[in-house]
Length: 111
Image 1 (cartoon, rainbow, N blue to C red):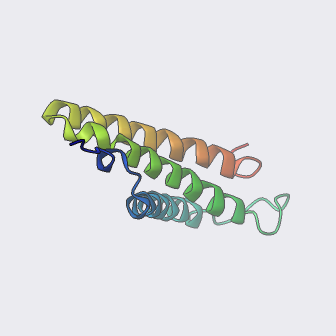
Image 2 (cartoon, helix red, strand yellow):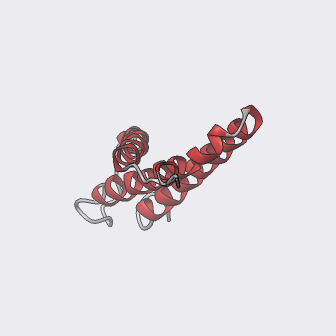
């Protein structure tokens, strides 16, 4: 009798969507707080200059959430590997947020 071990390699879409929403939500809160501090925007900027960072940064945060999801296989391999996976995931998320902020704020606050 043969056993099929396909359950360990399945892609759980509900879990990845949950991580994407968490990553995008954190990024949206951070960029909203950052943009709320702009009192006098430059008149040379477009009228709806805030839309671009409010879209780009949460998308970058969602990609960071996807990376966190894909690191789940490492979290089941022991304590030190779990800690390493969490540190790598946090670093990758911060890089994604930083790059999203640079792309989103290009031409306005990032000049």
